[in-house]
Image (cartoon, rainbow, N blue to C red; front, side, top):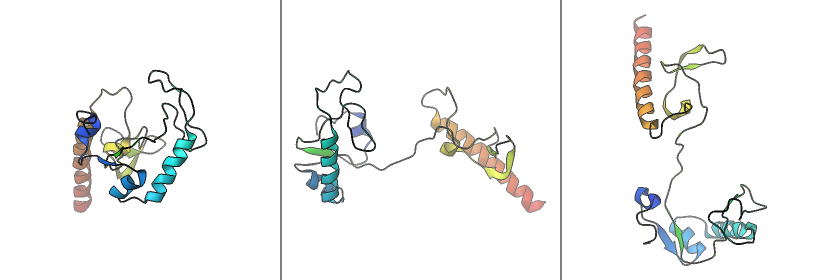
Amino acid sequence: MDRFEGSWVYETAALPPEQSDTIGGLAEKFGLDPTKLEETVSEFNAACGSGDWDLVEMYGKKTSGITPPKSNWANPIVEAPFSGFPITAQLKFTFGGLKVDTDGRVLNTNEEPIPGLYAADEITGLYHKHPPATSVLRANTFERIVGANVAESLSAAATG
């Protein structure tokens, strides 16, 4: 796996990549149904258009007849060894999400806080023109604000 070492994928994966001489063998290493993965790869390969692959040219090699379509650089997966990285899906952030005020209160469609409903982190989406690498800082800041506001609200309800 020398060609992957030093890459972002290799450095951030919790487990090393797996390899196999067959698609079915690779599926087995990940606990997947070999027949289904072989069918999926065959369907993808059949959908790959002809033509030369050009890393610079956009939309030069696309798929047709599969959903979702691959719009660029679609090359058949045919040359062994086949490699796979153990990953899990994660939702990092949303564009949009719930609208909140600066206290973390969720706003209704009339821009009014919904009583007792707070939100922070990815559920609130991203703000526009945000500087890169600030999502964790933003999440931590608003989680602290929301946590303090919820605690104050619950305390007031218990004593009131």
